[in-house]
Image 1 (tube, helix red, strand yellow):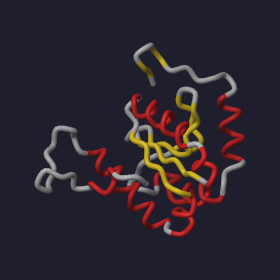
Image 2: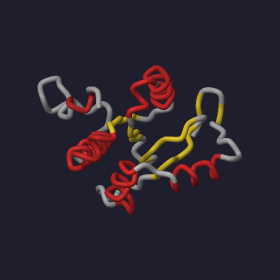
Image 3: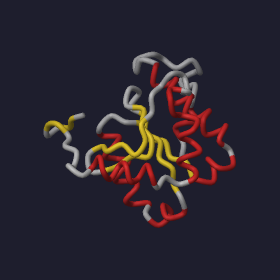
Image 4: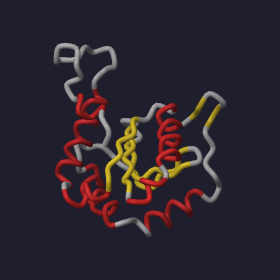
Length: 145
């Protein structure tokens, strides 16, 4: 991974911190991980609590440049931080999907369907025209999550 200033460095303690984050995963993180691990979703490999720059992302498919962030109630108080974080991740070429924990717990099928659609969309070449009269075939993914 690199940015305009050269390779992105990972802090020396990142591996240990990532292990601790994985060990202390929330129930929604564990629930979604059970569905995404071992290439269960379309053969795509996901990593959890993966360091990118100064951040640790909840789940990422590096191959498709797709990040999944699960937000609990504390995120309502840190919208500005989350926006800066997402902006930096997107500047590195990643697409960030955000879901509330209660969405994962109450509608895991819907969350997985949205992740699958985003993965499918990432397979399309950017110059390919949309199939729906000027709108993205998956326009519902462009809105807030």
